[in-house]
Length: 297
Image 1 (cartoon, rainbow, N blue to C red):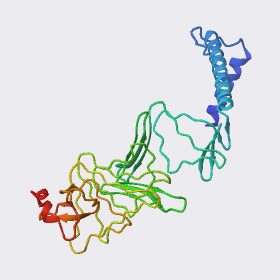
Image 2: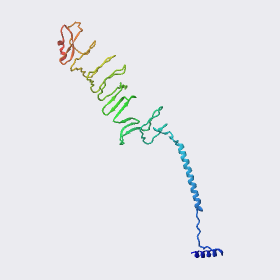
Image 3: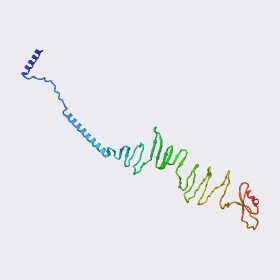
Image 4: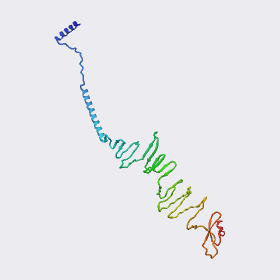
């Protein structure tokens, strides 16, 4: 092995001590790197990316400046521990879903729309359970029950499918035509304003007042008048009919024949026909009703 290495070294020494060794003419030379137009295009592309990066950074700063982004929120919209706080006026282009909406302590809450304002409540299945719609011509409430309470939580006005309840101490109707009820009304007291007349009227039907313990009609500073196109019936099934007054007048009762000619008699007695009709007859020493009985015919 050592002899072989020695022979190779001698040959290499002999070859290098003489004329230089000539390289083959067809040997290829490979250069490493990017040169020429490729290098210029790469630099141009890097420069373009740098310009785009600066433009995006400037746009991001401009958007943050215009939208008033801050650690507490965005502009008038602030993020607090209780939720979102919005200062000033805001416009919502799509539905707004929230659990609670309230205004500041020193200002009122204003909801405004060019068409209508609709407030809806939904259950867990997404079905509408209550809806308040304020339109240009009508305010519509869709709910199983509508109730208005006072400051202390006492119901003032309640409406459901069966009845309407007014919980106030007094219900006042100020319209010039009064109140129109198509069905019955249940109340313990009907009273007008001071110095105003109370009028109960049924233009085309009958008017009935019923009470289990009696109906009391009283005019403290005026007169009471009952008008009817046909009959007025006063009926008591178990009691009596009492007319308690200083003077009882029946001005249009039928009158019988007067007493004898030349008599200055001005007194009359009230007579009753078998059918209950009343009439007047000139009073005499005895009853004169039989003399004027022709009124009952």
